[in-house]
Image (tube, rainbow, N blue to C red; front, side, top):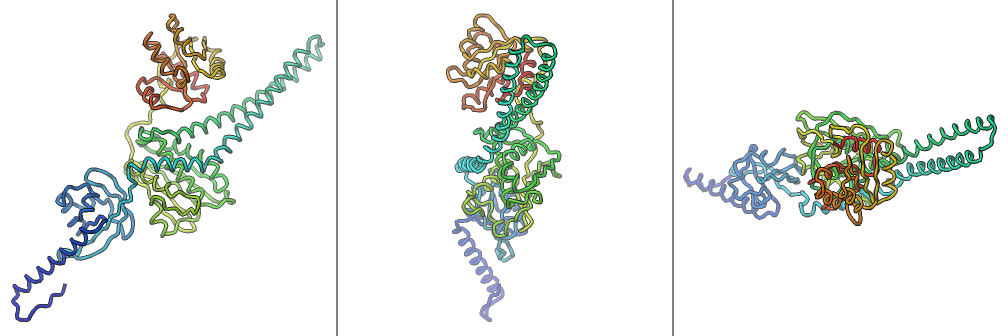
Length: 519
């Protein structure tokens, strides 16, 4: 600052005037900063020297004294360059995402840096609705592909079942008309019968394979459609990634070859549906960054690893068109999209909101014409991933044949379970829940009770409560079967009672293990 004074003035007067002008300059700067609607913070050598009211509000600070004198890194984790983003931690522990502009200036007669902070965090009361909107948009986008993925295995499963039924009917008719045949004709008929049996067995195996593919698709759909968005637990990200890849398969297959590079990772504390939404968005975006028609040459790579701090790292890379630098600055903004006419602009904003809410980071590197890499970093949890709640975690096994009660309002399901278990155990199956209660009331006891959770007249929960009043030990033998549709009451009930659960479509091995493991 250059100060021009009267030549007759004394040195002390010059110093006083300079000090006064400096104070006026600082006062003018403070006045301007305090009037700004955006948060503004001044720091010198990494120490906060001033924060305007908007900044104090953003930092949840009751007064300037709580902020001034603190290291900048207490609030802003990394000092960014001009016009970029940073993570901000308020005094109440909230993690915020802010756009930052940095301007050098003079304050109190010495160099300082002003940071202007604009909050880009999705408001919590809006976040849940945006998450749901984005999830529904993703499901709509993938609907045709999911139908294709289901129709293929369903198509060959049905075709093989039709073939098996026709062959078995023909074999029955041939056996019926075979009375009176001589030995040679009988031997020929048996040879033809053996060949047909082999064909039928092969067709049934293929039908089983197709049904199993549909079952896994339904499992993945259930993972992404769960509404218990706040329920968290330790999860293996690789399993969730596999589900996301299965969901996005139709988007991937015409655009790129998928490369999976799974390294060891720690478990993370997360909600499966929300974390799955993040991975699904990133994988679909990677696929859509690549034009259709050259899938053999193009690549989408999904990798997992553990970083030097023990955190879980997931990267989704593509060999697509890349992101322009001007777009790279805004891709995490809500409603900003580069997909004219097709994108909602919510996907990446929601992804970042979900990841940061778990104490993680979502970053991107991109080069136009070469592709992009999105990196998700999540803190680990020391807890091991628990086994899916179910009887397989129990250690004592039933010896010999067990007495099993099957309760399901769908007759074909009840009969199917009876057929699967009938060779090993003594089965009573009923479609009437009241009959099940009456059987226990009459004195009958069962080693295992396989009960459908959601039934129209009397739910599995009601059956459990009724039997528990008769014999609490019998209620502990319940294994609930469910198609995955839960009411709030059902979720709370399953958590409260702690009985094992089998998801439909039932897996034969899991079903048999469930009965064997009841004690």
